[in-house]
Image 1: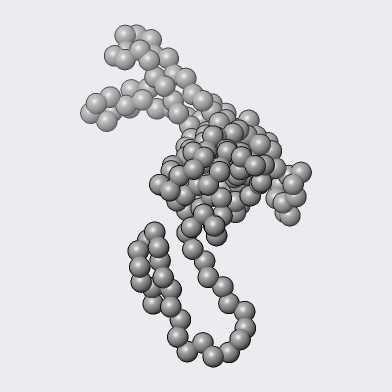
Image 2: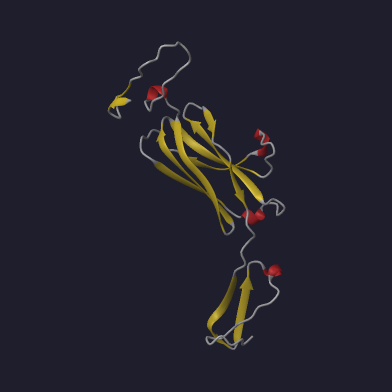
Length: 180
């Protein structure tokens, strides 16, 4: 049972009659990790990977390196490539949100359908902590077709970002009648 306040908590334990290993943890600067990572996610947005994370608190935090591995069985330190650096808030007891965008997934080896991500958190004193690994299964690239000019005046131009996968293109009028 705990009493006190968030700033000065008190923990009491009764009926402890045997000696053995035990420990207590707290949110105070004397007994905490430099960064408390709440969530780390990755999702695909067409040809980019959006990496988001949130921290509950930070102590002496300098920056985060966002890292990616294409082969990760097992993940060695040589597997990881640093994509970029995001400056941390330094010292904070508030929740902080961060984001990084891994652009142009299509430029990665097309045989790789799974990507692995992690954060390398670096403190101002040089200490390093790696996050858990998160996985992104790359979905097939979406086809987009741009038609112009609209309204059509005798000539219609169609452009696609992935024309090798287009077998047939049909254009219908407002009533649903196929015109081309």
